[in-house]
Image (tube, rainbow, N blue to C red):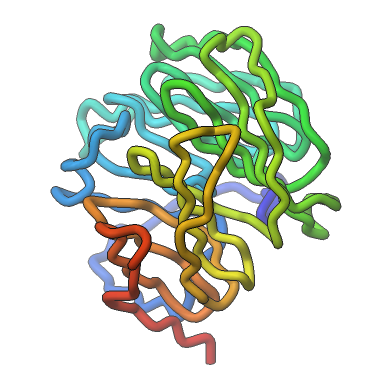
Length: 267
């Protein structure tokens, strides 16, 4: 999804390894990943990177899990210089969009549902349950008790709703909807302690007090141009918008402010 379609009529027959610096004039939609010492300071299930909620891959311990439209793939990254492909698990769907690892679980977003797998046996994730929802683009994040699923209208996903579904996942075999919140066109999201961050399209980045999942309180809106994804790291919300990557200081969420920007030139 996210505008990508694999061309199965072509395959790689050879390659040449070179040391090249490539300057990109845009950030591809579909993922945001931060690597390095800063990201490792976070209390994340990903040991060597933090993925955004729009990502098609995620790290859980020494395993990397990736999703295509149809399946889940597993890679052993215990030796980062030489990752090994482990296996492919067919999911019998054609609408898979995102994956979010948390603790020993994988939360997979599709156009019509959130699927939950347990990865305690890291090379053999076990299917636990599915939470179905209206057809829409569907990034998802989770914590110990709740999953947060944004649904947005988009021609690619054939969706018609724009909302946040909060789902109780304390019983992973039976996820239950807690409450639905109407939004403008929500995409990526992130959570730090009791603060929930949602990229709400042209409205910008919204920061909520999520102390009570059934009573989210909007604390602050940072007006940005077509926000897409966000990762929260040590008091900084790294936010992808149409015109750049913004760094937003949220150590005081009620007074959050832009502290830096990387401009994206599309000319």
